[in-house]
Length: 397
Image (cartoon, rainbow, N blue to C red; front, side):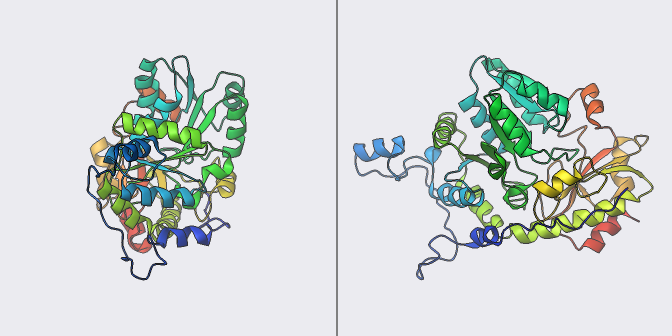
């Protein structure tokens, strides 16, 4: 195994940290220092004309929580700025965001290309559920030149990839993929959950849509479910917003409030988590029970150079290790890190372990998992912000 660098040469811009810390009305010396939680489900209107204009989007008044609420507007506005966009939408969860995108873009006969190593439910949504609406799904490897050539010469309405894939942590060349997608007449949507706006801003690299599960690292405390959609085109933004309302995919005020609070400490948490992941990756690379480690910061990672160019301030807080498959599944965790929780999620302040074969990628066939390099001994690690020496000691003992 090769050693990795603690962080990239490029640090995320300082203004991204400052913007995340700014409270609403920060120049008003009589304003509260924290955002209030607005739990209202409906608002009084001045007149029928006022209601009509608000529901049409030509008036900024609130009408019904399903169509927007103060906590959503505040957080969405902030995240739009952080992603370099004019507008953003919040939904009930990450899967709600992907659903709204699919419902807004895919029509009968449309073709969506999905990266062959996506979160399992993302694959279920597009390859199974939305195919029932008449869309067709093609799987491809966005890091394979032959597959990219195939994409460029085929029908393409939507391409969905992850900035850093789950769980093998491949890093996509977004500018190249955006160019090929646009040449084929499609839109590029990027699930940026494993990166956040601090490590990568996909719109800057040519993507048309960014989606994130904000309940992961952005919130960071495993007490929220919330999704983000950032669409570059204002017309597409409006089309997606309409689906969010019509299909009841709207966000919760409390979850928006908690996510905004978590956003304020994201830079501090992410810096420690990325550093911890780097140290743990190097330690596990020398571990006698670990066959291989997937981590973009390792110099022998297939997309290490690509990750160095695409990511800023670190190589992420996720790593995946591959153990000998001889141990029964129930013994894998106790044998390696008995003090680290088994949690089928990621992005918490506490480090956790996950087992893709039986959780996130259980919907893949055994043949598909084998082709992707996901085996019984594959374990994903979401690194938290514990003291690094404590964390490493829990794996190397």
